[in-house]
Length: 280
Ligand code: AMP
Ligand code: MN
Ligand code: MN
Ligand code: MN
Image (tube, rainbow, N blue to C red; front, side):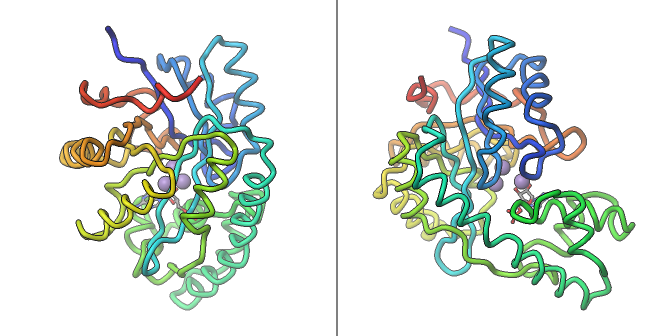
């Protein structure tokens, strides 16, 4: 049987993507996606528009959100939630609380960037974000490209915004326990996003995945726009080891800003159980 072309991780302009939710859904449909989840950062405000366009097109759609979680010694881990009730109050309130920290973090980032000669970054990033509660490093990156300090968003992270670089400030996001409680309470499933991106030792990764599993997490992204072939082998192995369901998501942010387009990832390794078997 031909595997389902599911894409369960992408961003619209409601967070740090470039396309409006309906445009993103049209692009996914045009690319042959058969099941789509929109997973904006800490925000579900794009789901209604996306779901309506998916219904118009006859495209299967799942609710999604990518929650920023603080883990261990100042690590950030992203948890993708899928198939939840987007009106569940603890989830709605919890996400609002996570977003509530973004504005003050952005001001601290701008102050650090100012010290290294990048001026006006708060206003510059806000211009791209639109809403102070959604301001992200991606918006800073677009502003720094606009200033001509870097050729593209990727290099801005390498020089200024990645952990250890001058514009990086540490920030307390949600706890793993809170994020998983919001997701389970809302009837959704929790998936570890792009594990290949975390700078965790093997032992730290094992600790993180065990804690995630103990708190009710059931899935891990194996196919991700952030993963190379070695990551795919490694996280397929860990999915088997922990008994996690496997997810597939491009993490598409927009044309020209992403490694891979919507629905254009390889299929999951055939022996893994896809996480969409748990979605209606
Ligand atoms: P934030 O949630 O504000 O910390 O921003 C994180 C976002 O920055 C991610 O979701 C990506 O969209 C983007 N990002 C992080 N690291 C990189 C990178 N190395 N290259 C390009 N974009 C990145
Ligand atoms: Mn992003
Ligand atoms: Mn992420
Ligand atoms: Mn993402």
